Length: 393
Image 1: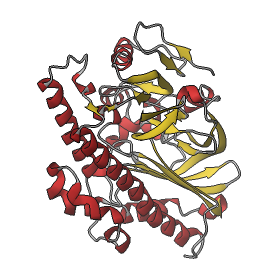
Image 2 (image 1 turned 90 degrees about the vertical axis):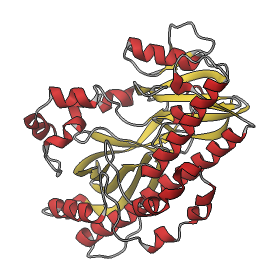
Image 3 (image 1 turned 120 degrees about the vertical axis):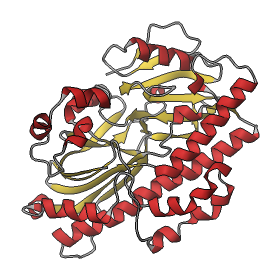
């Protein structure tokens, strides 16, 4: 589906790939961002767009000479990793529960951290730059070390999936853990303080920004790149453990070579060239989908997920959605649905069937098939997956 231009009066247009009408709060949030003087060309909204903090989740914002820390968000580098195993689904029979239990034993979830630190984590090159990070995180080095290789909570997950050709896939969703959150909060606070000192009149305080060429911009950009690298490596560490567990159950412990590997951010910022100009591109709940880029678009824990390849659509800043997108808030989902609803909607998925996960019930998310139809001009589907095991944070 091609995009539509929102009928709003802003200096910068807003192009939307969503086929649903935005609510008043969502429109206001889009207007606020599109009214900033440094926003480049237009703002792009993905099919899974919904309310966020400062900027809409599912938005792509290109800027000239400035960046908005709260638009990137507090889970810097949050994203997905997936690998296609050279193993077929028939090998999973009778082993799903034990695989789930082994994953839960090997990978800390929620607020938990690793009791032991493996050599790959200790040797990570990023530790050499830790002392250069924001002073507000300098006492967090030990926590950051122990959390590297842990899932976190909320909508983060680990899944065993099966594609339409019966190949087994391993997939997970996580970010930069506590260290990324703390870095983001420190820089967001600094941006807000600067805006107040400079008496900059912002429609939303969460749109406080840093201007390129200033020490504050340089410090944030440095810490942002570090946290994005931490998040990517965090997924690598977990995936390595996850792969060994599955190989133990399906390949007798033999090391296998993946048929395809994907690791992509969907909450991040990078310097890129678009429409012939170098800009800072913030993808807040969006995946880069340039030509030949592989991406991952998960549905909810009871729905399909997709491995995609980008089409390089220039109007979207070569981007696509990062998932199905929430249909209702976590609070509302817990009030609307029951444990019986959860059991019904996750039938056939080996997972913990508990009330604490009601906010992640499939019914709280938009239908993933509709979301995919709305971005046929952004990506092509490489593989369609269905989860059979799901571990939640």
